[in-house]
Image (cartoon, helix red, strand yellow):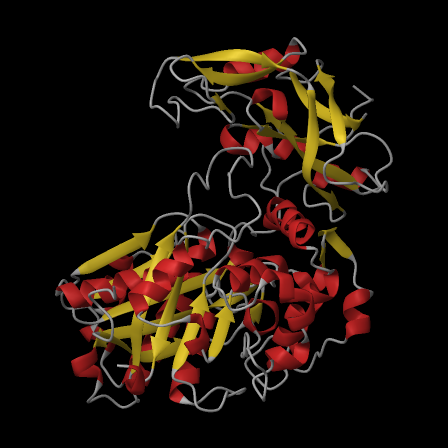
Length: 392
Length: 147
């Protein structure tokens, strides 16, 4: 059964700041958020004062009330934060924004994310503390701090269960770097990756080498959502939201790595729900943006979204199958978190919209269905599907 | 103490303010591996919670688990993300161990021995307690070694 919002809401505007290496943004994180929102409003052809709702995720520090005051928003109607899951909340924030519009709670909602890690604590570094309690007490004293360290064992077990070899992970990294070379916005534009460079890169935590791990960056991104009816008269061809799903399977957050479905990207129940409510099948997907916190998460996301069979992963996950130009499953066509910018995955949502518009720097021919998987292996995770007018 | 697997200076584990995990951390100090067991339905549970996830009973005991298990997954960490780890020039191994004798609950620890050793999922391991008695606060960790 399709959901009640299929095709009722569209992405009318997309906006990004320049993407920087972490700590190198010349502007404050709040100013970056404002710049991305204004860019998205300009892209949509609206006055930013028309925005009446804000959605974000991962406890974005830039609160809607301050943004509204700064922008002179006339009437703030909706401000919702997706709970938990870090980057796993990206597609959920889009879904929540769309739900608000479909329900009539707001008319013009912006989904945004702004990060200037140089001004705050970095994701990949351990916060200084003398003691630790809660779930982290079972992890930190054993040297399990960073996201890479928390997720490596899920990937290791998945690769063991399905006999997946390391070149499959390498191909996922190569795809992102390959597409970044066509994208002048990408932080890794002009820095191509070869198999040799990947193989010779240092281990971060086995099974992840340096190039299996996302960047950490500064910047901001925003998408503006309006009703499909309104979007028809705006300056870009509308990108319709076909569906969004969020959550995680049974007891995913059981403490100290006790999730029953451990070797998972957390999408085993979410992905089937997404396809059902979007009214599409995996075979309908023309292009995929799959959040790379680590390549192992992409591997499991693709399998759990039924885009690659686990038993065929070694054979299928080769660069030629993942490229925009002629690949069977074009993947991360802007360069993604590995090579465009770690904008906490919101850059993937924007790239998915570009693929529907036909404006990507690595455009896939004839895109009608554009899928995004937000941050895997956390809980809750989320994914969403955008469609062209032909899909309605 | 100088014999610890990882360098001193990592955060010391302490129970939450509500005391949920106190029996576990106190158990380690006495070289006992404690896990929860529901008095209502007999389900083992770890990490601890205030309710049995199976039957919703609040009547939960702590029982001692046998310190034997199998490696469910593992990783070898090279990049030192915490300043204290920079003192260690070798990588270190973290294992996730499944305890068949306690309802297959899993525990995390370090794998003793050569940090470059081949690690095989399914290998049998047994617990090794590592006391940090001189630390303030004092605590004990549960590591594993291949049998």
